[in-house]
Length: 296
Ligand code: HSE
Image (cartoon, rainbow, N blue to C red; front, side, top):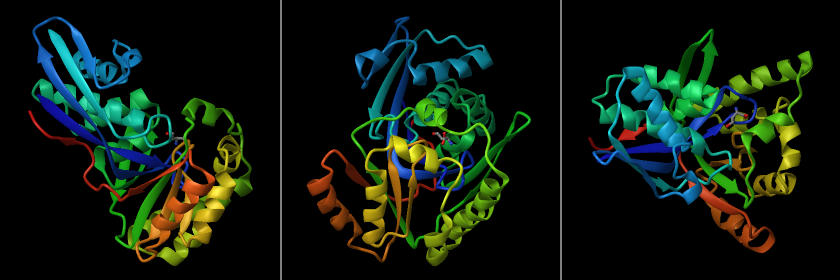
């Protein structure tokens, strides 16, 4: 039995739209076994995901097809901790889990870079799959078919919280509300802010992080899809956090807090219990390792 553990991710981090992603200490774990029974067996997920349309299985097939391998039968088990359709990279974990599981099952014929390329092809953009594979704070891009990434550790002065609502939001719906064109002014607004956000997270500049995360490319359009977005972000600021952003395409709100602001979690828990019982708070730290094959 092979186990593959994949971290959840938060893409964009405010002004880094379609570029930044951060791996976080919340995981989906996938177990794989090749069987002789000629069947596909998928467990640990709702019945509607237990067929050959399952994303983990489809990702495995990409590897098998590329190397010309035909498994006799397959058993897949999924342990899910990452909330689904909440902007925390759960679909990227399925893709990465399936690719690394299949590759390990057949003796690792493909390199990590080759698996990264297939993962981007399946997901359509690299900003979740790159940190899910490599861990840390990652900037990624696709240049004429070639996927490139650069990774940094997050400075230990920061901690993170996911404020997760009780409603899902699909990435397709959240991309639908984006404009087809943006102004020159909005582009130049985001450029220094994105650069500063990355450097402030990597180098530990909390005073700059407080000021530099305002985005004009996606959050103004998407926040309308997230009930209570304004009040949640305002409350988080009042409780002394450094900054907030939409996690990926939403609807989760990512809070960046200073480790010295020790009362944040307790105060936010009390607020949610009283005013927004459908929301929950998940304390998180950066994962600097990325995908891990735990057996096989
Ligand atoms: N960068 C993508 C988006 C991430 O914001 O649409 C989706 O997971």
